[in-house]
Length: 252
Ligand code: OAD
Image (cartoon, rainbow, N blue to C red; front, side, top):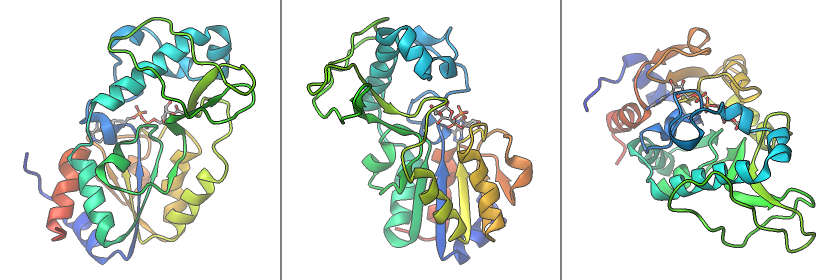
């Protein structure tokens, strides 16, 4: 689908020497990964995804929460990076462009980008819920959703293996937010792609970027909690806007 790159965005991108792209679930929406706050589908549709993403939910029903996450892992394994992920990889190949993401999928990497920081962890970095040791063995991914799956057991201490994502009330991976702050304060242009701007501290990064002198542009088909406090809001999907922008910049 064709779109016109707004002149503000093209000017800001053409003149930027250092760029940071902040991504959220909308970045992967056109790959077929459901966002968090748009309507959910499937087995977990009746559950608020935030209610599942807590240590309390894990303690109350470990097999249920594990089943939810292995289904998400299976879903991410089945889908591909979209044109937006690929455009960012093209742009990064020729520019000083950092990516800081809230996403726990690996679609930026599979498109060929290097990700500076996964601020909310990774679906594919499971670890022991007891001793915290990384769990590197292959995880069986189901072909269909199950309501309950018992997680693997840590070979070191016998604890249950948990997903490597950050749950509400937990600390972010060490240094993950600081590196995002360093990136945005060192940038001329910050793109905020596909996030509702509801979850802090990540949602503070656009404001921190503006405080550091960057121009901040949102790419999102919908208005968000951030839209009114940024320099420009481009209401377009990531898989349409980013390739259009990278093409307009003349990047191969
Ligand atoms: P949300 O689900 O809150 O927001 C997704 C955003 O993507 C919305 O603003 C949509 O309008 C937008 N969107 C939808 N389709 C899009 C498209 N094709 N292109 C661009 N944008 C599109 O997801 P996040 O903001 O990423 O945290 O959520 C933040 C955090 O809340 C997640 O990392 C997760 C969740 O709970 C944890 O699990 C700790």
